[in-house]
Amino acid sequence: MKKIKKFLLTIAMTMIFSVSAFAASGFEFILNVPFGINFSIPNKAAKDFSLGMQAGGDVGVMAQLGYMISVKDGFGISILGELGYSWDSYAFATEGGNSFIIRNNFNSFQVGLLPKFNIGLGGRHGLAVGIGGGVKIPLSGTLFAGYSGIDAVKIFNDEKVNRTDISDLFSPSVIGYIKATFDYSFFFTDKIAMNFGLYLGYDFGMKIKNLTLLGGNGIGGGAFNLGLQLGFRFGPKA
Image 1 (tube, rainbow, N blue to C red):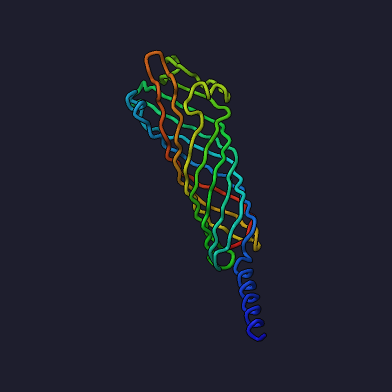
Image 2: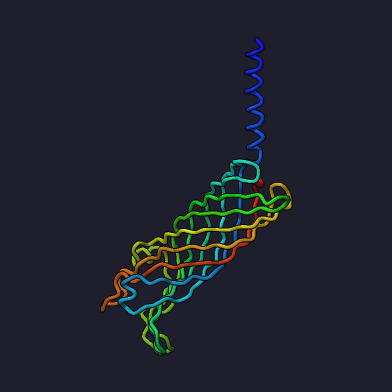
C-alpha cells in the first residue's frame, strides 16, 4: 500500500511540475508595422537586357497569430501564422543618362509561417528571433517600363493593373519570400508588450512574360530587403 501511495504521489508531483513548467505557454498575437528598403537582384534575362540593381521600398501591416510553448524558464518557442498587407516597390535600370527603367509597385496580400524562439532577459525585457517564409499575392499595382525623360518612349507609364492583369503579364504571378526577424519586447504587464525590431529577407520576384516585341521575355529577379518594425504584442513572456 505504501508503494502504491508513493507511486501516486510521484505521478502527482510530476504533473504539478509539468504544469508549472508550461504555465507561461499560451495564445500569442502580434500586430506589426514593418517598413524598409530593398535592393533588386536581376536574373539572367534582366542582365542580358543590361538591367542592373536598383533600390526600392516596402511597408505593410502584419498580424501574427499562434501559440507559444514554454520549454523552460526563460525560453519558449512560438508557432505563428502571418497574414496582412504589403506594399512593395521593385526596380531595375540600365546605366547612363538616358537609362531604361523598370519599376513595379504592388499592393499584396501576404500569408506565411513564422516560428520564433523567445528568450527572457529578466524583468520586463524579452528577445525573439524568427525564421520563416510565405507568399505575397499582388492584387493591384502600377507598372513603369521605359526610358527616363519627359518625352522618352515608355512601354508602361505608371499604368494601373489589377489581379487579372498581373496574372496575364507575369509568371509566376505570386512573390515568394523568406525572412528572419529580431524583436526586443518591453512588457507593460505579464502579457502585453511593445515590440521594436528589425528584419532581413529575400523576395523571389515575378518574371515578365513579354516586355516588347523585340524581346525581354523572362525579365525579373529577386530582392534583398531589410528594415525596421514596430509592434504590439499580446502573449506570455518566456
